[in-house]
Image 1 (cartoon, helix red, strand yellow):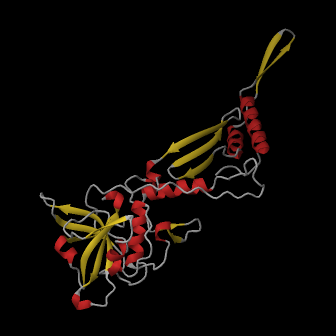
Image 2 (cartoon, rainbow, N blue to C red):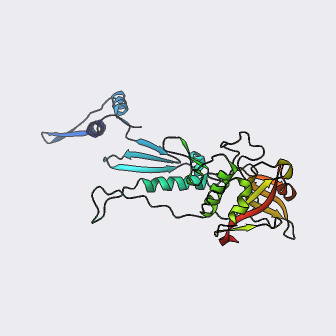
Image 3 (cartoon, rainbow, N blue to C red):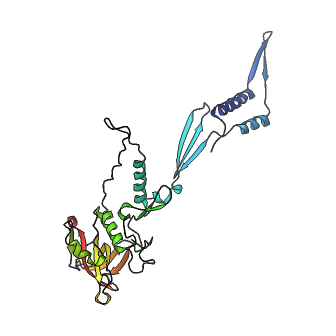
Amino acid sequence: MGSTGSREEINELRKQWLHDKRANNYIIEQEKGGSCMKKRFFIPMALVMSMMMAVPAFAQHIYIGDTETVISYDEKGNKIITLIFDPAKTPDYMKPDSLNYWRKAEQAQMEQIADVPVFPQAGQAADFTAQPEETPFQPIPPLTEAPEVGTVLSNIQQEDANGNMKFTKPFDGFSVGQCTWYVRGRLQEVYGMSLPYMGRAGIWADEAKTNPAVEVITDLSDVPERAIAVFEASAEFQGWPGHVSFVEYVERDKYGNPETVYYTDANGAGDPEKNVYSPGFDGSVKAVSYEEFLKPYGIELVGYILPKSTV
């Protein structure tokens, strides 16, 4: 990193080195009886090298991400700061092609805002504590192409300052790991809308009909993107609670008919651990044909729910 001595000690050593260096070629002129007598003094090279090696390094290197900051000093003791950018040292999360780039950037920005101290204004008590301003909701834009199967689109968890994984606000609720927990969080994440408790998944379509903020679509062939799909238990599995998932993207034929449905959910078919949050599976993209989407094993599609502002 640099020398361990104080600034005064470093400067004193440096001055001594410069003085000895000049003395090596210093010519003393002495006049005697009108004649000029020149005398040259030499310092042995070994002594000069030993003195140079004794001088501490005057550079300090600081590495932050992909930038190296070098602090050094010129011969006059002036500080010189040099920034060296090395793309090879860029952390993965800072690369634009990283899946977590925008999420990490947003998280870093929020942490910066949280670190800004807030002082009492005129007329406020000295012990006034300001409440942090909520960040304006930024809607997630629709997908323009089919997402990669297995990709987790939702920002379900983030690492806090202590290195612990915490659920983000949309998913920091009750019934963690259930399909209703995930879909409620995903809707809030995409639209900024919070749904009230509506019971088991299979009755969501009926319950939503009394909510003036949403629209219930029962034309199953009109598969809306960025909408909740509601499934009831099929006749042979009466008593099952049903299921809900979130439609992310729909591939259609040239006539506009749905062919492949890309959706995300939790606690669904293939979930390695039921009724708890399964990182990497819950919220990951699945893709099935429209016919398979209509009637998964033990359940059948009954309708879609989405905010009225998008209908």
